[in-house]
Amino acid sequence: MGPNFLIIAILVAFVFANEESFRSLKGAQEISITCETEKQLDFVLRFEDNNHFDFLKVSHVPPENVQVLVTENQLLNFKMQLDQNGIKYKVLVDDFQKVIDEESKAQRRALMLANRSHQGDENDTYDFDHFPRHNAINDYMEQMTKKYEDVTLFSIGYSYDGRSINGVKISSGGNKTKPAILIDGGIHAREWISPVTALHTISELVNEKNKELYKNVDWYIIPVLNPDGYEFTHGKDRLWRKNRSKIGHRQCRGVDLNRNFGYKWKLSGRSRHPCHITYAGKAPFSELESQHLRDFFLSKNGTIKIYLTLHSFGKYLLYPWGYTPAEVPENEDVLLKLGVIAAVKLKALYGTEYKIGSAARILYPAAGGSDDWAKAIGKADIAFTIELPGTSFVIDPSLIKPIGLETFEAFRVFGVYAEIVYKDL
Image (cartoon, rainbow, N blue to C red; front, side, top):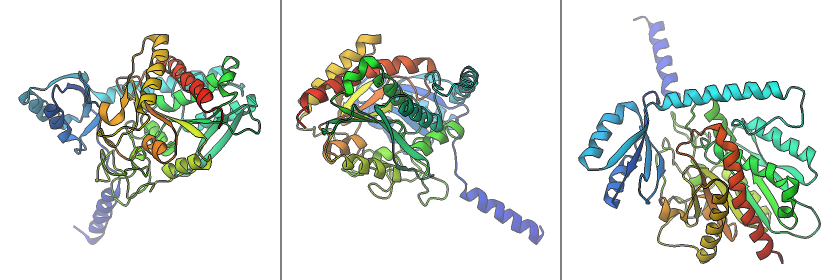
């Protein structure tokens, strides 16, 4: 081996050692597991820190309370251990890469059709028939500001990669200080139904029949808090969850923004390893995106009384606390009643049933969430994480409109509540 060849070999090895590593989803299976006892659930959750396992859903409420994606090379051993422990399971998806490939084809077809149907039309370039990219989301909000005088575009700041994190304020104006509702989406990159549902909410609020909802209540809607991660899921890794900041690890990037908020940070439900999908960061509010939401929230001087953050999936209306099942907010009775009313109104449209309760009790303890921070520090009286419908992060685009419409019925409940309870703000 000549010296030049040796130098090249060393350089190649250096480059690949510093590249991000991505798991292959070819042959990976999505498995639904029924844990009938806490002991069985504890056993399954031992695999959480293994990067070959992606826990898509974890709930303490059976049946089928765990959904996990397992890479092909771990399947045989994992299933064998489930059998040995008497744990029931079924395979939902045989090869997850095929599901992603089909979604990509459907997205390309929808975009092509949308471009054809809207050629020369500057007023309406999105029909809620596919999952829009970040630029398209921003364009849609800008169009709304041009079309409706009650809609104002704003930015809360820029992401790690320099993308503007935009939102709209929907308000009837006037000098009076009004109570406000803040809705955000897309804090987890792969949850595509979340940003588009926030966008659908904008389209519903500006409808003439809904103007009463913002007559005495201001609405702030930020569809994509994690634009870098969201764009990454469209081009590189469909199941990417975190943001895209460089965290000092050669082969891993990103922080789970919903573990990065500065209330009970790192107390539960997070990984210490930078490569894990629930890595909470080096410090609370270490990430630009979580900092920007915090600063925007606090800049409203306590007027944001209701905070609603959109996630997926599972059909849950979850209120704080997320960091522990041992405690609940002092106004839990109000949160529970409001959640029940919202769920009833939502169900009336298409029959979708949501479970209601504290996040740590229904799902699992997870500290550093935006909802806990909004309730404890941001002084929002009402805070909910809304886990939208679906059996996976990959959702048929035909469900975009139904999910948007039924979720808006829940939002209508929160809007009426804000006007009645906080009218003397």
